[in-house]
Amino acid sequence: MNKFVTILLLLVPLVMSQQEVGSIIGDLLNPDCVQYVNPVGAISTTGTWSISSRVLRTDCVPLNIAGMRGITPNNNTQVSLTQPNGLYLRVKQAFLNMIYNAEQLGARAKDCSRVVVFVRDMVSIRPVVNRVQTEIWGAATSSNPIYPPRTILQIDAFNGLTCEYGPQNWRQGTAGANGQVVCENGGTPIGDILEVEGTFYVRRR
Image 1 (cartoon, helix red, strand yellow):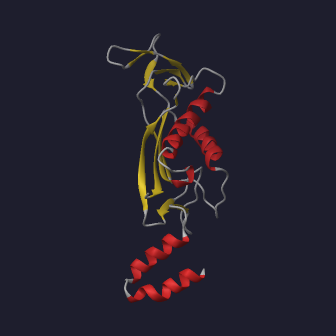
Image 2 (cartoon, rainbow, N blue to C red):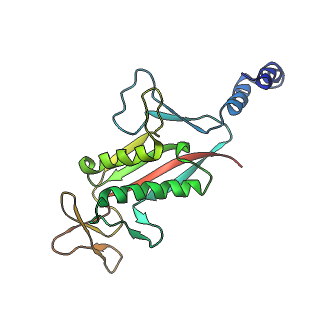
């Protein structure tokens, strides 16, 4: 503990409560807003997620990023699923879109306190999500969790123009009169295969 913090501990209790002192000390000692925690005795994590997160500083404020899909920003179209590695590229683009929007407000990937991922098919897409998160957040150990808490859910449909013709068999449809996806040859109008939303914390400016 540095000299300034020691002096502060001795002086501020004269005019402030213990809780207020604790908040000030926490702000001084923690440059980051978010810490990931896997409590001792909790279940083991089975992927790129932590059990919990906590906000370390009193001057950190939340940023809520809307659900992002695998849309290329320069042309506002969905990443093709029929190209080589199309599934991986679309999933990664969705995460990159989320991170980009957070960065524009001053946040980094490590400032993410929670992500919610919606997928069309858990079996085929969840491993790709794990891969993408490892590329963005890095590799972790049980004693050094670096992934935000994650909820991942399988749902039937999204906004978008993707059609499904069987397991991992997707093609793009066209937009109908009201913007809904129209599929040819008996395809199922699912719209997309993934969406991810995140909450981040940054220090108040």
